[in-house]
Length: 320
Image (cartoon, rainbow, N blue to C red):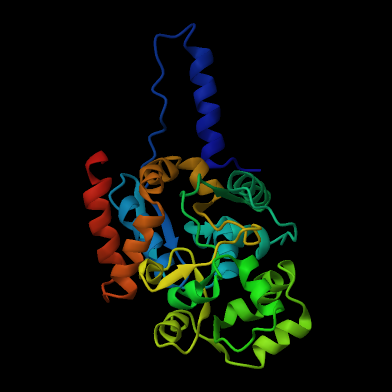
């Protein structure tokens, strides 16, 4: 069977090491001219993923020996995961919670410790021909939020408080959730069951002022007073509004969703510079930072690529 280029180089290196004892030198590298390695950088379609995708693309684009290709904004989690495992894409950012709960082999166990979840998700990825680099510190996990005035009037500051409020017979308040949150077993149905809101109580809430809508519109319904409780994500820029309170997940139902550069294993093995180059980007991203970047795209209408490039220039650009 023909040897791969990598096997050839490893064999050549071993030969040089042996020959060094008896020969004056060894040139090492074969006299074969190769072009740059293509690295197709992908992402999912929503704003935060496009920002992360362009942070990777712009960071990798100047690297010697790498030809970064922009395939950002195409496909969902399964499509990007599968394409990266197969090597038709080479790198994108995946969330630890998504890798654990939604992607093969789809684990059911809830793991709320961020470090442990990353280790388990990375081990699963390795079994499928993928590598996950260290994740960023922020988590794009689900949250339930409330209108601050309503929260102060009712004393609902945690999800346990919300459950007690419902159990006390209060079901007339407005609720707005996005479609994915409503249909996923580990979201609306799961969190209400976990916090002790039974089927009958949940039915009372859902038969009232309950709206299933798209991501982002939940905050508009909250702002306009048509909802008092809404679903969201912890990196949403709307959470910085004074009128919004994030309800504390005081019994830790929602698992972490930390983004990690995720790559085709053979590509990153041959080119460890990919993960090495992205490490300072990962380190520069925290919750406040990603909310600011999301705000520029979602609320100010700027392009993800421009926002990503400017962020790199002012934070990690000097590191080369």
